[in-house]
Amino acid sequence: MIDLDAAFSALGDPTRRAILARLALGEATVMELAQPFAMSQPAISRHIKVLESAGLIIRRVEGTKRPCRLSPDAIDGLDQWLGMMRKAMAANYDRLDALLASMEQIEGKG
Amino acid sequence: MIDLDAAFSALGDPTRRAILARLALGEATVMELAQPFAMSQPAISRHIKVLESAGLIIRRVEGTKRPCRLSPDAIDGLDQWLGMMRKAMAANYDRLDALLASMEQIEGKG
Image (tube, rainbow over all chains, first blue to last red; front, side, top):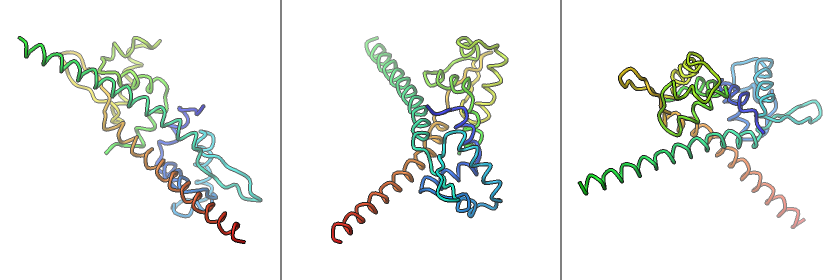
């Protein structure tokens, strides 16, 4: 199970969202991730630690490198929460539609 | 445009997510929102202010009440960001599949 508190909080930062968007295209090292940002490697490393402890990214060991990749499970977890919201909203709109339709029917008869 | 920084940060709290889940079912007043939580009305009000300033909920004036409702645009905004991530991940997997298929073909010929 994804920790939604940590995951959503981690997403509240534009650099961290940009890192995730880059990782959605494939695995990358910290050096590769730091390149497009006007940021030091230690600063990027701190963001990566936040993303890793939130379960949004996974790192593996490859010699002296520790490449990062996105956790598909984490994205699924966020998706599930949003999906639940959309479903509840849609059901609510359907109820309103049904209510309006029944009101129109009553008005038509009256 | 939704402020993704504020919206995702606001979602990093379980009470705020529960308030949004309740509002996905329809409009509610602060008093109605406070009922299911072991929390004072002022505490719930503070959460609602965070959600409102993040653009996740909208309030209207109805006499002395200010009922809250979910902003469908905000949910769409979050959805768009996640959709972009999913699309990039899927494109990445497709590229890997194509690469593996071409490698198998070369191995088959060799």
